[in-house]
Length: 285
Image 1 (tube, rainbow, N blue to C red):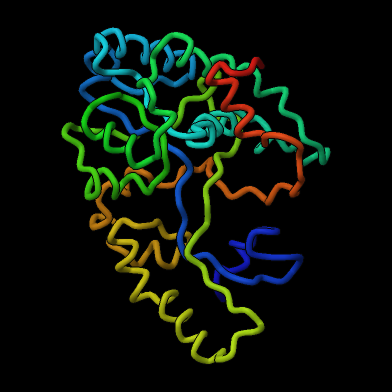
Image 2 (tube, rainbow, N blue to C red; image 1 turned 135 degrees about the vertical axis):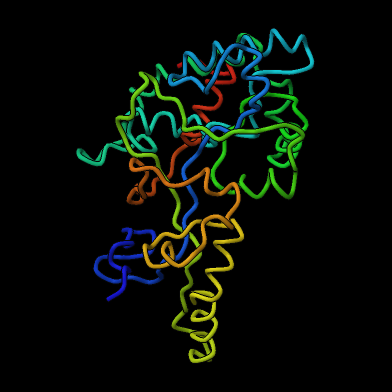
């Protein structure tokens, strides 16, 4: 037996009872990467448990920075990077979709948007960061330009190899609205392969799939810190000590993969852009 049926996600890799590809790895849900020194200088031993307290911490860090260091750095359409995860962990509807009643309802997100908008209203965000791409902001974080950065497990390699930090950095779980986890944080299955029915050489195609899904390949990939194993078999085969900082992004009990939300076509901006504009202060909640 394999674990394929344990990783069957409706409309992601399956339709009904049919599975079309099996993920071998997983990208964690979002975490907060932070500058340990800046946080301690602000009087905090750890990233706060609530969003409101995090806003306060960002304010203190910004004041200490005196125009050269800020509390937070965002990136283009920064809502989905980590603010959305705060809502999920706080028990809000994933992507605004009420699975039980089959409707979209974003009303519960209003307090989060109002609180998060204080980052900008009070000047706690690195100016202009929201107009830049993710790599530019990663480099700025690594240089110590701001304290809090939110992203998933790919940052383990980024801040070790691509943009090595000039300081000690930590990884923390996201804060929530009330300081406790009430919902699931979305994580993303990845690294699975499928074959089209139109494939001209299915035998050769299957050999490629077999290789990239093999224990030999995946062991090196996971131990290199590029992804985390999704199944228990490979989790038991790798030497986690070789995965470097990826261990800091180990999946939490409250992380899971949500079923796909129904695809809808809307007039104007989608929910993520609209919510981000509220945080920026361009719209009101």
